[in-house]
Picture 1 (cartoon, rainbow over the protein chains, first blue to last red):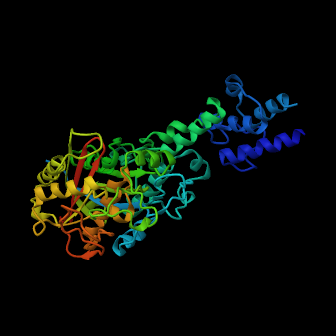
Picture 2 (spheres, one colour; picture 1 turned 45 degrees about the vertical axis):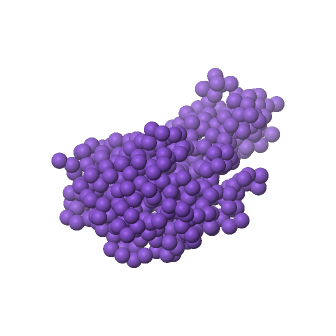
Picture 3 (spheres, rainbow over the protein chains, first blue to last red; picture 1 turned 180 degrees about the vertical axis):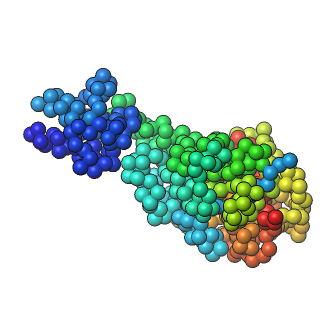
Length: 79
Length: 413
């Protein structure tokens, strides 16, 4: 189940940010490593909300810096 | 002392072609770019026809990520900006970037994005709106995105003067160079307004043609049976340079801008006054600005929208300045082939005017079978014509009573 979530999150990031799967390692930071800007992250988080049918508040959004942050949040809130 | 301004690069996408060569070939052949609307289901609309781009591949010019977040009018501008810069061989770098500016016109910017996001708002609520909505809708994000891509850090602006926007942009860019504010300008107009809202709104004004059964014959400027304009989409961009700078770098020079002028009718939000004195004044002032007399002009690229009012009153305005049929230069409307690209019209028509000078070919007015009452100039009906073209005056008039005329002339050192 957890690997499924990871796989899906990675797929969305690859599509939204136009990066390769290899770049999309858990530690990859959206801004510094994956070339995103603040608007990219807003759009990315909206895509996560749509795909996992959950809501991510602005406070949580502000704390999401890397691939791992997103995966962990979704794992914790999607059980 | 004003500096001289020359044109060194051209780029266009329009209903006749996705580059300069194909577009000009279409103009010379008198081809129509008008067809049934494919962009959305227009079956319930009064007008079901438009001039769409055909086979244009956005991914040749922008990444998949950018494509999702940019409105089409911005993508068309990026494509034409790239083609025009390649054509001019002008490089923009840290040495000259501060002296290169951008002024582009657009009538209604990202209206399609606005409509789509409004649907999202109604269906899914305010939290589902894309963070890229506003930057896709604002008309000045066409020049803004070009500046980012090409590193042009000089004067930037966006003209939003409806169907005159392209001409206003070129006119302002010309002045930026002639008064010394920039050495080179990327200028023209971009439009992508073939959307359900725009088509219904123009229908509500009774402004666009409903000749749905024969779309290729729908845009028929100066013809007796014209019934409104046909909405087109696309972009036309010119690279303007200060003459000595262009000569120093050995640039190929297409033509020179001799002068421009703008006036306002101050009369009605959409209709021209009888005889269109504002347009006549505008052409007269452009001649004055260029230091030319009417006899110097060999060809007028008319606004020629194919609406009953414009074509009659533009004809009267031309006659007031240039004289009657046997005195006036050849006049034609390339909108008969491309449709009306609103804020991009001035851009593509500048491209065609410059090509007329360079190639010695006067574009035709197609579909002109029977000239309408009062339309009695030489409109170059149906077929393009060969001939020496020393200077062209290009008109663009817009809602809000805006008139802008630009004069292009053959370049001589």
